[in-house]
Amino acid sequence: MTMNIYRVLGTLMVLAFLLLNCSEEFLEKSPQGQVSTASTQTPGGVESLLIGAYAMVDGTGLDGQAAWNNEISNWVFGGVASDNGLKGTDAGDQPEQSFIERYDFNSFNGHIRNKWRGLYKGVARTNDVITTARNVEALSEERRTQIIAEARFLRGLFHFEAQKMWRFPIYVGDDVYDINDVESTKVPNDGKIWDDIEADFEAAAATLPEEQSQVGRPTRLAAVAFLAKAKVYQGWDDDGNANTSKLQEAKPLLEEIINSGRYQLVPRFSENFLVETRNNVESIWEVQYAVSSATGDAATQGVGLAHPYIAPWGCCGFYQASQNLVNAFRTSDDGLPLLEDFDDEDVTYETEYTAPLDPRLDHTVGRPGILYKNFQIHQTDFVRDLSYAGPFSSMKHVAEPEGFGVTGWGNLSANNYRIMRYGMVLLWLAEVEVELGNLERARELVNQIRERASNEEDFVPKVVQGANSRQEYSFVEGEVAANYQVATYDDAWSDQDMARQAVRFESRLETALEGHRFFDLQRWGVQAEVLNAYLRSEEQHRVYLRGVTFEDPKNQYYPIPTEAIDRSFLDGEATITQDPNY
Image 1 (cartoon, rainbow, N blue to C red):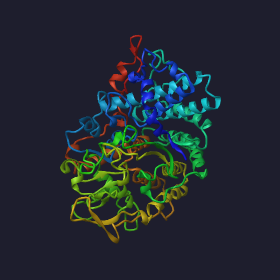
Image 2: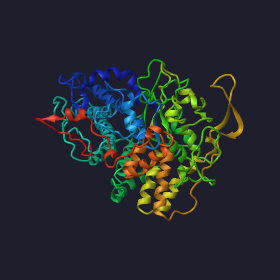
Image 3: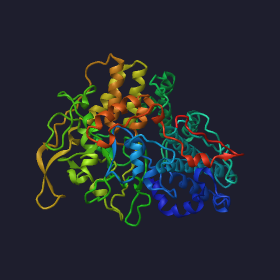
Image 4: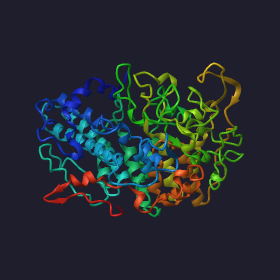
């Protein structure tokens, strides 16, 4: 029986936090050397340090921040800042998110500051693991090698997240990290750090095993997947021109994962977003969560706010879906996406919408009149302020009824974040094949995704409201909730521009509200084009977006926090410089 590494946190968390004092902020270590104590200079101590590094993956565990500031799913930075999501709730709650939603990025924003703090505290912990593991003689060589490989995987992940956020972040390796020298990590940010990120994942892939006894620890193919993702993310420049050399490097890695036979699409799209079906055959690597009646410390704290405002959740209505996203799920009568004119008509909510829709919509977005994840029928009472952010809720991260209410705050669950799944690999390879001119192969890959979406067993059923409570409903036998139509692309693809548009549109549908969209638009070099068109459309529904524009190139990345720059001074000069666009 496999163990979940994050459940180990339940017994080691206290030790980990004692060992890893939060004075590591911005890579400054405690001058008392509290990490490098005698208690860590043992095999068990090294294992505890590694658990402490894993504890930073979900973005919590940092003093002085709210859990959602540095959440790994990026629902704020990758979702609210995109054309998929809205801040939601009401106008006055979490104003820093409102600034992000309106592309008013500033270096004093606490969300941006804490994202930096959390990521680089994770980096510090991985470097401490690596340097300590090398020095503990009692550690077996085999275990030492595996610990270092896992730490390098995590270090690559933390730096990957940083490269997505900031144009020129810093890379801090174990070659400069010294636990006893608070100045050691004050390194310059003199360019992108992709080469170092790739090196970490390459090293991890060269050592990690094919299988792990504990879910949550990365395998060799998980490292290969993140290495491929790093190369795909370098596949276009800021103007949208393809970097085919990087895409060619990514191709054999993606094919290796596909050809391994280890992964496949789960039969039902919805199975990627349930507690019951965590770590399934589609999962390559998940951020593991755990919850019990005693504690929710290892649960989904970072998305606690992003639940419906009505009971049984009661808080807090954040992360609503945009009208533009909902409209993207409209299809033609033959079940194909409306690539050019999806936003010409709104999917309405006041009355039943009867035109064709992709069935993934109702596993992605809560909309009035539709059963919401088997809890109850979604209505406008799910949202905090209908006039402010509209009628649509997010839902993928929300646990099903069986996974709800386990601990004190019911919103905390063990619904893992599927940060790397097989469906993503198929779509990335499709992107690569389009740019390399292999359009028919790209169509085959996209059709695998669409074929799964057409599984009628996963269509949300039609229900009617019961008379006794909001939670009561009954099924309408033999009927589904909407006019679901989804089909494969059966005509050959011969036009590269159309194929590129189709693949990118499919990626939006498949991964909507999973925190990727802003960064997808970033890596494709199309943020200004897409987001300004979105703003002109969405402002017709959300008055607070009127007149807002996405500034290019300024808003392609977030500003480096002022606090990080101020704390980087060495010999009278800051080693970190601000993005020149700010």
